[in-house]
Length: 252
Ligand code: ADP
Ligand code: MG
Ligand code: MG
Image 1 (tube, helix red, strand yellow):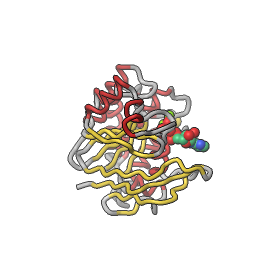
Image 2 (image 1 turned 135 degrees about the horizontal axis):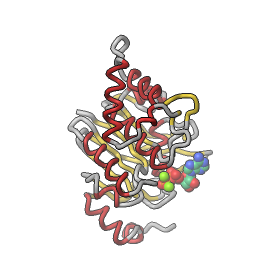
Image 3 (image 1 turned 180 degrees about the vertical axis):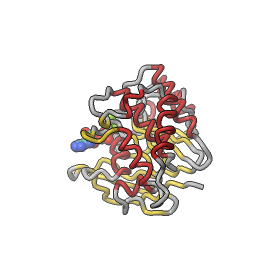
Image 4 (image 1 turned 60 degrees about the horizontal axis):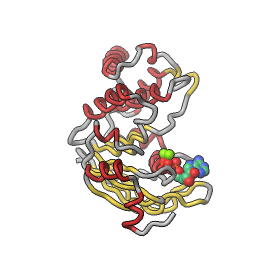
């Protein structure tokens, strides 16, 4: 079964330490949520997992099914089955969405086993329909001029087509109205399976009403300071984060 392990991960931006030792283990079939106030390092964790050059991993280890993720280039991480939807997806001019998707799918396949154009188009069209996306988005340049909500839906389209082992979604709910949120959540729920694990990063509990997590972790000042079940997210929603700080003696 899939196993994703983050062990003592520390990361810095411009010599400033942001992640101060993250420990997290995600198995196939599990959905973990990370919640936390703004500026606590949630997106930094996603960027470090992606291998973003601006974020320097200073210590710790990350493995996917025993393989050293930190040793891989960003595209190798994707090939290994790690999928990251970033809070602010990048725009790529000159590359259409469908070209991008087809090469991403083929990058995960062995040479000579590339997906046929017909099959790819059929799959893409059916997934776009599920996500209630306008078919014209297939031919638009990747994320260029997409609204916030369209970018998020497009990230979920990528996830559906790539069938990754580990999915990390950073604030996939931001900028979505309630109908779009339900569509995105349904897309995620349809992908839940015994051999796939999820890490859902969110500021708000709202999303977790639609994607039920097995575990909820609270991140503060670059550390996971508390873990529990879905009831933890509900308490954070109704009471905010102050009680966690008080309980743990965190001063900010
Ligand atoms: P969150 O996602 O929890 O809101 P972030 O990971 O985005 O938090 O940010 C954590 C800290 O790192 C913040 O203090 C933020 O200002 C800083 N930070 C994040 N990205 C950069 C960057 N590219 N350059 C400089 N500082 C950054
Ligand atoms: Mg933020
Ligand atoms: Mg963030």
